Image 1 (cartoon, rainbow, N blue to C red):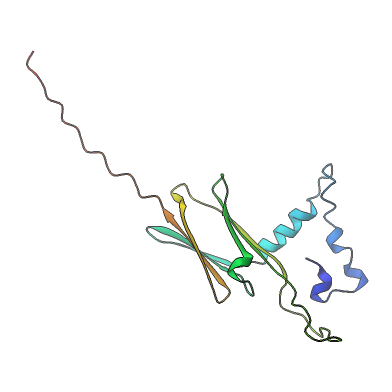
Image 2 (cartoon, helix red, strand yellow):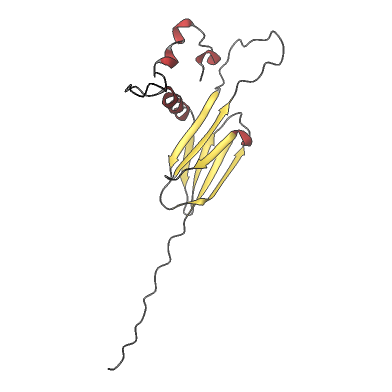
Length: 155
């Protein structure tokens, strides 16, 4: 996220985002710029997680985003990834400029490791009034096995 968009246009702040280094410098032990931006996005995206008997529900604030701007994915490692990006609104009138800009712009992201009993095929996502609700159903527990009776023959 460009700090200048948040009102930090002072030269003192210009080098802060370069602190993490460049993505191409894999020899460095410092985290990459992409990692730092993703970490910031995750820290700034509030979420609640509820466990129900048959499902898990993730509630994430996604202010200003439409459902088409939000991406919900599950990868092979059972990681639920939720992301989106709130862009700065285009200025409506020529010559208008922001006097103060406090609303957050930039990337929104959260990642959750799903439990083993989560059914990756039964996930729904609904966005209403800037709040995304993702429901992940549980795999039903296996039915208890009935004992099998074996006939004893006289032999």
